[in-house]
Structures are given as structure tokens and as C-alpha cells.
Image 1 (cartoon, rainbow, N blue to C red):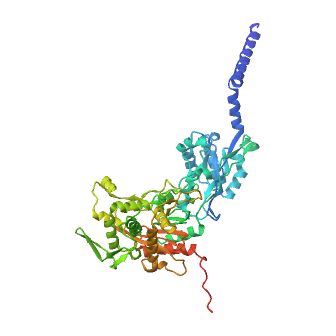
Image 2 (image 1 turned 30 degrees about the vertical axis):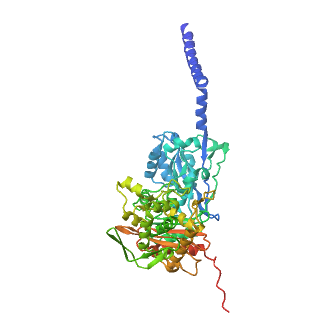
Image 3 (image 1 turned 180 degrees about the horizontal axis):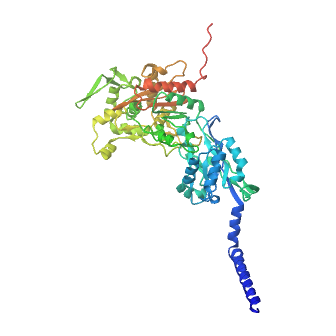
Length: 573
């Protein structure tokens, strides 16, 4: 009997010792860790997206903005695999979201970090209301606001504005230090990408205390999200709309319009195009297939090289006059067919002995065959580089711009392993052969003629830009201006000789691309005496001629731009 109290005391002491040891283990050795775990269960961080800065046209019209949407999420750390089926069925009943979608989103959104998973996006107001009413029975799920990019004009200027999409895990590893989050969105192309740092803003959030059901009890702290900055572009909404409509007449092509004095781009459009809204939040499988079709709707054709055809005769004119081989008054005999070294090259008309202005006006091939042979390929390509060909223009979207191609003697020897021949000189002189010029480069060239010999830097946002003096002789500039004006008054683009427009100057071009249909070009400016707008229109494999396909596009833009700028006719007495 005497041993029982001692045994009982020993058992009590063992249990008390175990409890003390366990408390010491929990509170002394792992107290900080356990307190953090308790706070994780009690305190939740709710991130707040920054509102991305708007994109505006030069007059302040909205081209890109942001819109609010409601999404359904689950917190994976609060919903085990065993608890998920019951929660899924409740969500199907309350929200009306298909079970298959919930399952697929949960699987695809799983991540090692335990970030919340989006189960449904773009919820309707009635869905949000039903969730709020039933929230106590949907522990582990939540409805929260998301901010998506919105382009109110749809496809308009899509290649300029670009689009945004969610960052990948690999990108997150690199961008986390810059304040990005796993659910962040970044600019993928166009201005959205180039001015990402300006537009994105900074994340904010709330620290809230929740109860066991996940309901917010009180706000412990708040950091407001910092909105991104608006960005005003040089684009003119009305002119951009006119460019988009004009391109509806071709399957593929591009239009560039800019201020010849400053290089400010007033319109830039490409076909085929796309709606950047499909990337908010993400394109469907069918939409993604369409975006990657062989016609390449994501490709900005204003920055891609194509044979310049007869528009290159401006360069050949510069080569002839600046080399000293010809003067402003020189004349060359034209004919229906020009034969050289045993080969004959046709023309679309014989005009007798003519000078440079008329040769530009009627786009005489035999005239420029002979000029090219006399000046030689070195002078020809020297003039092309002087006018900005074969190099990028300096526009902000530098990752999307290509330098085109000047297939000179060195290029042919290095790439094709062949020697240069007179045939190469003849074809290059009229803009065929191994020549590729981008519409934005061509706009820069016409601007140099229009502004008196300055290569401007095309730009989409007003900023200090470089103007390069190319030093053309006054006589050369005068010949070019006279010739480009005659193209419209009595040459290949009389469609633009319209009294409703100011005097227009320019040049047509029809580029061969066998076995496909021809390309069509027109480059020009107005008013001819004091230009304020340069326009390049291009139809890729459009068939037809520059004067019948591209010139009408230019006319549509000029009609929009100069509407109301001409004096009204005087009333008859």
C-alpha cells in the first residue's frame, strides 16, 4: 500500500515533466516559428494590382486603358485534396461554373509557392452576389477584383500599341526583384513592351485579420497600389482610323504617315491585324491558332522589308546627280526595249530624250537602266545608304524593326558566292533584285525630300530625336521635287491630282514577286510646296499597280488629314 502513493507521484511527475518539456519545445525553442504559423492562419495579405497607365493619342483620346473584372480563386493551402471535391460541388451549385472547368483550372494553376489559383474569370455581378451570400460555406475560395488591359477601339493600331500577358515562372524568377508578382502582367509587344516601366505602376495590398471561416474581421494595415503613368503618343486617332479603313482593301500591307519635319508618326497600320483584347486575360485555343496563322497577323509589316520597285528611282536619281555623272538638265533617250551585253529589257513606253523629272513622272525603266549603268553599283548603293536604306530608323520599337536589305557587290559575293554583273546593276536601278526596303524606311526617305535634306527619326512618343543632314545639292532636291510633283499632275498617280486636296507629290511602284501577284507602293507628301504629312502605302502581293492600289489609300488619308484646311471657293458674283 505504501508504494502506491509513490508510484502515483512518479506518474504525475513524468506527465508534468513531459508537458513542461513540450511547452519549452513549443514556446522557447520554436516559439517564433509557431507564432508566425498562427499569424499565417489569422492574418492574410491581400495584394492589390496597380492600374496600368493609359495610352492616349496626341489629342488625349484613349487608345488603351484598364477595366475591372471579378475572378474566382482558391487558396490551395486551405483546401486539401480530400476537401476539394466538396468545395468544388458547392462552387458548381452556387456559381454555376462547370465542374470540368474548375478541375482543369485547379490542375493547371497548381504551383509550389502556394499562390492562389484562378478558377474562373470575368464573373457576372449575380455570380459575385451569390458568392458573397454563401461565403461562409465556401471556406478556401474567394472572389477578388482583377484589373485587365482594355483596348476600346479593338484592332485599331494593334501593332503599335501591342498587348500584355501574364509572366511565366522563369520571368518571375528574374523580375521578382523589380517588384513583379507571380500574377503580374507585362507588355509583350509594341508600346506596351517598350514603355513597360513607365506604364506598369507598383503593387499595393492590405494586411487583414480573418476568422476560422476566412472572413475579414479587421484591416491591420494598407499600402495603396501606385498607378502607372499615362503615355501620350504622336498618333492621330482620326488619321489612324482612316489608315485602318484604307487597308481593308488589301489582305496584307502597311501604311505609315508621319510629320516630315519632326518624324512624329501620325498613323501606322499593318494588315492582317489582331484584337489585343483577346490577350485579356488570355486567348482561347482557336484564337491562338488564328494569331499564328501563315498570314502572320502579329507581324508588323511596316517594319519588314519588301522590294521597293520604282519608288527606288528616287535613289537612282540621287546617285546620278550627286555623283556628278549627270546634271539637273541632263537628258537620256528612252525606248520600248533597252539591249545591253546581249540581253534586252523592256519598258512600258518610249518618250524620246527626257530629263529626270519626266522620267520620274512616267516611271521610265529604260531611262534608269542607263543611269544605273553609268553611275555603277558603288554610287547606287552609296546613295541608298545616304537616304537611310539598309539601316534601322531609330523608332522606339527597335526589337521589332528590321534593317531591310541592300544586296550590293559585297553581299552577293559573300552570301551567294557570285560575282556582280551588269544585270544586277540594271535590276537594282529600278528597285528590283536583292533589295528590300521597309515602309518606315521609305517614309523617312520621302520626309528627307520633303523637308530639304534631313533624315528624321520616326517616333511614337514626343522626345528629343536626332535629325541627320544628308547634304543633298539644292539642284538635286529641286529635281526630285519637280519629278514627284509631275507624277501626280501628269504621270502615274493622277488620281491624287484632286482639287479637294492640297498639291500632292509622290511616286508609285509596282514590285514583281513571281509567281505571286505584284506588290503595290505609293510614297508621297503634301502640300507639295510646304509639306506637313508624308504617307507610305503598301499592298503586299495585292496585284494591280501602285497608282491603282496604293495611291487610293493615300488619297483616303490625305482627305481625312486635310479636311477643312483648304480655303472655300469664292462665291460667284
